[in-house]
Image (cartoon, rainbow, N blue to C red):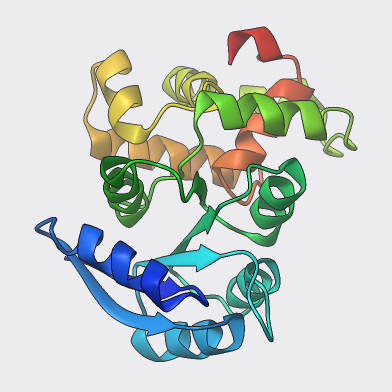
Length: 219
């Protein structure tokens, strides 16, 4: 069962999300918060698997709430839901530690799928978002260790998995492409992040681009 916490200052929005999510077997909405302050407190108390987080809220906005949850070691995957398709929201929330980004105008099926993907421990990074992330962060300081040395630390399968990550593929999609199990892919992803000393899948995409493994045209 994927346990979900909804954080949004509009009661009707929360009601709509709850209705959509609870029609899907295997998803349970365990709490609702009206602002970031409540959201941070409820996440600590309820220990959800996924937090659906609005951006613009009173008292504490979704970006700062995400930062606090990440700093507090919250294990939940944070899905940012917003009515604004703005790059500044996208990049700030991803930098704050969000695992996914979805517009509130998305179809009900997309919301359900997003929660399921994050509930499985995967990041929600579409090819479109991947391109925007790369464009924004290309040119950031490179890691101190030489690229060749770090790439050599990866096995052939891990290298292939990294290239798939950089294209915005989910674990299930990578598994299908490489003809391995989803659990094997999850292990490869964990190994990649550990060996390259990266925080998350988004960092892996940026790293792969900065070190010439991919280009924006390949995402």
